[in-house]
Amino acid sequence: MILPGILTLLLCCSTQAPGNGLVTVAAATAKVPAEAVARVEAEVEPALRTLAPYFRAETAQPFRVVVHEGGDDLPPMLSAMHHEGSPGFAILSRHEIHLMLAEVAANGRGLRPVLVHEFVHELLDQACGRNGRRIPRWFHEGLAQALAGDTYLGASEEMIVWRAATDQLLPFFELEDRFPEGPRALAVAYAQSYSFVSWLVRTRGADEVLAIARAVDEETSLDSAMVRSTGKSTAALHAAWRDHLVHGSGAAWRALLSEFFSLSLVLLLPVLAVAMIRRMKADRIARDRLVRAEREEALAATAAAASQQGSGAVAGSAPAQPGDN
Ligand SMILES: [Zn+2]
Image (tube, rainbow, N blue to C red; front, side, top):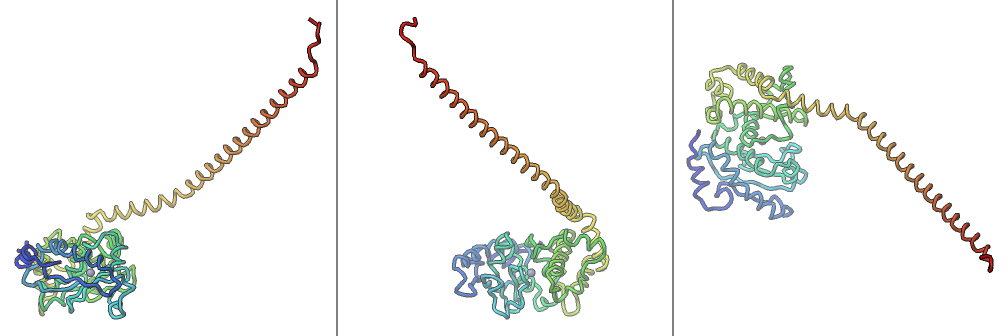
């Protein structure tokens, strides 16, 4: 485990407000409520604490979080950097993180995983110093999701397990600089990155994975650093990960169950429709019976009243004759 060092000292000992001076939070426009900015500020320190064991302190330079109402409210220059539906993105060259409140709310898992995710981008870049820009995009997104314990854009291993089984995953070399544009391919890219880096962290440990990133320099790519550290070729690592994804992760079963559940619902629909028709028919019969019974009751009551009236008229027409006794 990497010693927390100065970053931890900053986090534990400083009394400055959010992020203890490491992170400042600001509203992008006057339309962003002060209460929303305060909520983000309150989550900065817990998010930093989550990451304190992973990043060296000497790389920690101040950075800022800019809070926007949502992706639709971004100015054109920032909008071009934003993937639709994503709750945040980092501009590493400016040490800036942009947070979209509407997308955070839509995600439904709160601010913290989003802050942890974006902080990983910033702190990983800082940890790798001037070679930070040589870290592939798939590694950045994979580590950010793995350490945040949450994915972006609904990405999941279930989403890619069949691709892995049929050799249709996106080649990692195509995910070095940028991710694909289409929403489906973009989610697959996030899912692959998450699955592979999570597997690396589980099998090699976070310390080794971060040491691999820090070993990147002008002559050493991340792939080379990974091969040197693990003693396995990139192809062997990818094959071992794919094998785990298909046979050991449980993703295939989860995907099957999910498909089965959807299929079951589809198959159940005619049964439900027949049951509903039967129920409606039964209701109609019961209602008709009730109406009939009420009508018969009314008729019976009318008949009884008429009969009573009849016997009263006979008694009146034959008054008792005097002396008949
Ligand atoms: Zn990210």
